[in-house]
Amino acid sequence: MQNTIILASASPRRSELLSQVGFEFEIIPSRADEKEISGESPAEHVVRLSLDKAREVSTRDDIEGRWIIGSDTIVLLDAQILGKPVDKEDAARMLRALSGRTHQVLSGYAVLDRGTGENRASAVTTRVTFRSLTDAEITGYIATGEPDDKAGAYAIQGIGAFMVSRIEGSYSNVVGLPLCEVVQALETLGAPIPILKQPSEL
Image (tube, rainbow, N blue to C red; front, side, top):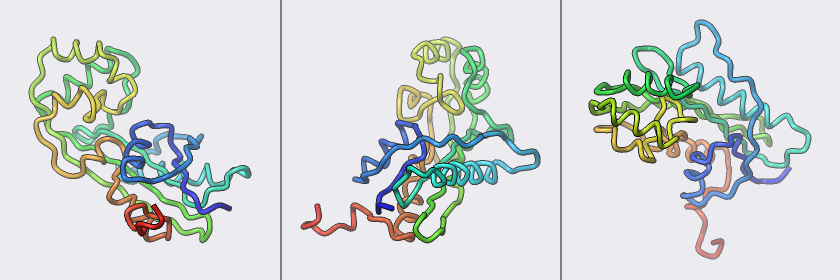
């Protein structure tokens, strides 16, 4: 087992967040089942999936990394989960529902230490407020293709920023990974943290 970090996600947004603070890591997307369980709260849902993703990767015989990061993000409006849109009409429905209103973005995270069997997992919530959108703005935004694979049909770090009038909480959480909490979990579990390296180690 190597003292390296694995991101159990194919999300380029999560990868970019880890990279921007100097982490070196391997990307190994999880094959865990992402089905919903009846009676599960949104927070329980994203934490369970985050753990499932990390654990699925950790069980593979060909994996050498020690610390595995799993994460899952959902958009919540009126207690309803808005996942990734299935088509353009679905994206339009979601954006019309979000227009002029405040919703929640929940990201679960899990950091699993294969060396000790320990893990740190939790969920982070951010409140996001959209300004009122016109039909033309919704149609134009969908035409960019950006909403296609995004929970809630928008990307705050992309063109979708024009819709967001206010954010309360973690920005990186809305992008897809609560970076502050993940770094703290990695540090607690003994993973190498770039910001803590001495100049001679850089």
